[in-house]
Image (cartoon, rainbow, N blue to C red; front, side, top):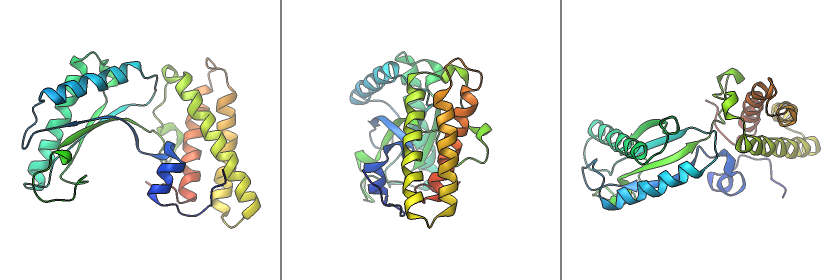
Amino acid sequence: MRLTLIRLSAAVITILLPSLLAAQLMGTVNFDFDSDQLDAQAQQKILEIAESLKSTDSYKPTVIVGYTDAVGGSSYNDNLGLRRAEAVANALRAAGVPIDRVGKTETRGKNELLVAVSTPERLNRRVTVGLEDILAACRSYREIPLTPSDVGDALQADLVTRVQEAVSYYGQLTSNGGNASAFQMAGAARADCEQAVGFNRDAVRKVEYAKKCFCSSARMQVALGLIPAN
């Protein structure tokens, strides 16, 4: 499928390039009004998320984000959102998710409402559990949080995807021209990612080139306008 090299809308990116999304959503837990307590429905949902996390082969860290509805002040809701996120994190650990799989907790408070209303709304009172994409516009590949223990099928598949994306964009830019920075970054991403894919899993430089692949791939996507620069 041929992609037009323009600044794509969020909806188009969601359809065409799911690997660019900030996190792979594993599940959402909802809360009662002004509460950080887990009701029966929330506890059942956490058990489902826990089973998904335990059965998912992924090197990506878990990120747990708490939200509130629009009722109340920003400071109070920021704190409430964080308490909700921590409640879910603790429940996931209690459900058997390894401690090192339960990553950071964050709060968005009453920002990013799912339903744009100023009244109490259960859909807005939520915690999302996702696998954070380490693909970000990095200053140095050394900042990418990969270790030898992360090498496996999931990482290899992600590297192959980065190669395919870089090769596709490089070919299109070769034909179309007009974006010298993106062309340069696509060439670097193609080279780094092909190197990363080619190394055996136990090779000393596998992780080094995997980091370079993620970093140059991110820079390419920034140059294309697909993701913002950090």
